[in-house]
Length: 360
Image (tube, rainbow, N blue to C red; front, side, top):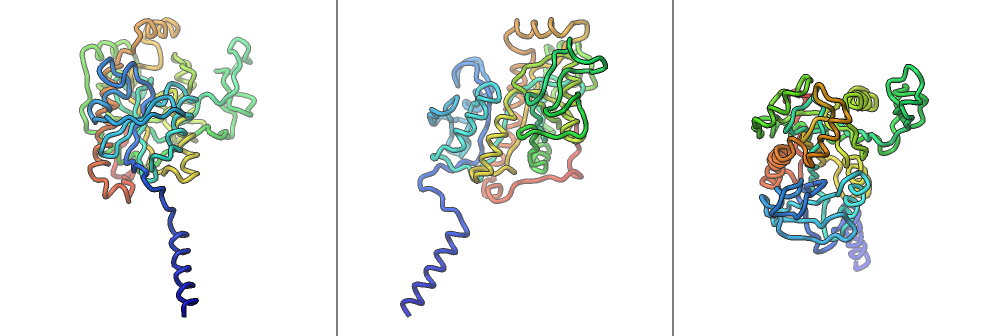
């Protein structure tokens, strides 16, 4: 009888072990991770970067040093954590991997909200607008020939890897070239935020008046649109045209180019690996970028002069409004997730295409 009882007990134990992964004792459960890319100075009390509003307004007062990353993590008592990746894809990939593997934290049910500023195409965005992305395509994995040496008839010297000419069919993405987030979750976030009123000003109106483009003159609003992520900070109408085709090429016309940013392919690569390792849930990732500047020159100015003018000013024309938009829109989603955590911990919120009026 003792042998039978022990066998049954062993069977129950093995069943429990096989059906769940025990979590290390003492891990800090994280509900939402806010991913910022830069901070201008200190985390509080000076000119804000992408982190500061989150720290000050959400009371992210507990600091967790993260020696293997670009910046310490900050957290509040509600389960909201924020991190700064540092500029460029390399910093972003290294920082997110260091955070994701840190044994102090449990990210198994955490949502990740990338919330930063970006360049925007005046065809699809306006200054200060906040744009939810479903597709992120890397713009650095490529061949390139100086345009002064490219064959006659080519419109660009940028080629996909393993191709002999620009946009040669069929498209074949290299590993780490293209990412798609959970579209249902993105549409839910858009539906939750599309009615928000974003900050506008006479200054923004004046800047917008110098650009042509279908959406250039619109006031700031919440939009849907996709991102080309590249550590190369490019600028100009011709580069905008390349980015639009690059997005369409790699997504089979499913993606609609709207924003250009520097870090997100690195962040998403690490999150993809961490998901494969069971550390994070890929279906719980959101990408939000607010437009701080247009990705090209205004009417009557060449691209080089436009870029020089941007750099001379030190900050972009819609810098502070875009930081405000990124926080206001992102925080609406973060606040909802934290407030109703008992629901969202178990079930990822989703919206269908039919219930969401899309804007690109």
